[in-house]
Length: 104
Image (cartoon, rainbow, N blue to C red; front, side):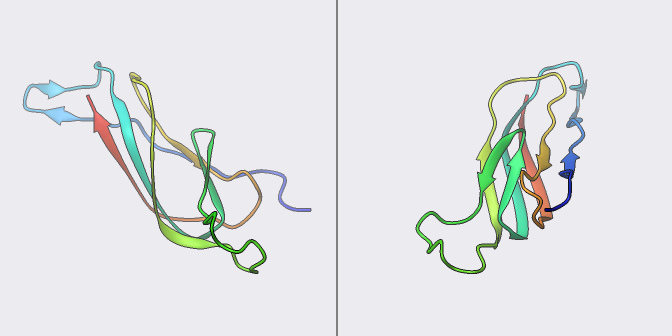
């Protein structure tokens, strides 16, 4: 029993201005993504589940929610790369911050 849909957030493609002009036509790569969450069990980024609970922690504890900054890496070059954040199960998730490292 729960909500029949999972909320998602998709970022806009990065727009990089340089002294020689915009890099809109060049392929770009999002090499690292950092997500800061509060009181959540898991987050999904581009279809990849990011379990934020510790493997070494006791699974019998009542509250497995964590609040921290988690880093993950993405592969591949795209014309307009974006990141889609969401959840797999209908549990509360709070995204406090989001940052990317862009290569071009």
